[in-house]
Figure (cartoon, helix red, strand yellow):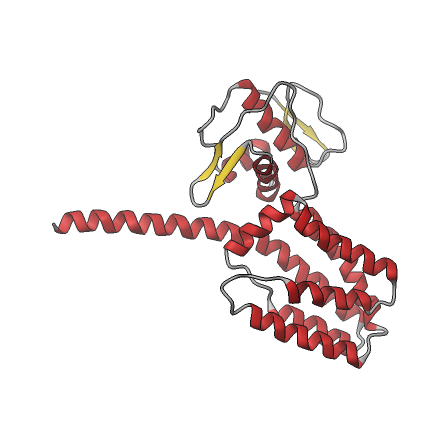
Amino acid sequence: MAKSVSRNGPVRAGAYDVPANDRLYQRIARRLVEELIAGTYAIGDRLPAERELAIEYGASRPAVREALIALEVQGFIEVRVGSGAYVCRLPGQGEEPGFAITAFELTEARIMFEGEAAALAAAQITDAELDVLDRLVDAMTAENTRVEVTEIADRDFHMAIAKATRNAGVVRTIEDLWHLRSTSPECALLHAKARNAKVRPVIAEHTAIVDALRAHDAVGARAAMRGHLTSVMDHLLFQTEEMAMEQARLALAGTRQRYGGSARS
């Protein structure tokens, strides 16, 4: 099949026109659905690995991962940890993938809005509000020791900074972004995978934000918040990948143990 190049990178030509405002991961998802419709893959087939798809589509692995997540939440594929993505449903006639906001898009928006919120809060945050943030950092530290991952203290931390801006629009915007984190199927799925991979809030990053706010350093607060949320994006990508790699290592170790046991018997 021929390939065409767009402003967002290479993408294979398909059977129908792709909306001009589609993001790269959306175009990849549409092409994968086309292949399902064309019979390239049958139910039960394993899709090529992320790395192979990234090369095939001339895209980054995050873009491929977003595409697979979009198809997974709609029931076309199932991503099995340490094994890969398997087809579990074929599209109906004329069926195309739908898209909500992804975890990467959401985190990108949070970097923009929460970075500026931290800078604005730095100018007017009170000692009492700083004490609240200190207590929330302690709460996050305690939550990190529990088996079940919770995000209550983390959310309250970010919302406390939003409220310290004294701007109702900022508070509403950041509140809505956190709401999307749990209500967008794509976001919920990837964050669930991250929780299963034991990804926890990084205490040092939150402490750095508080330190900059306590110094009423707007530039430092913005940089600390943006650095923290950029790290969140990295963790969403690499920690979930590490979980898959660890499962594969465990499976390999089990295989070696079985063969070793057979050799000794």
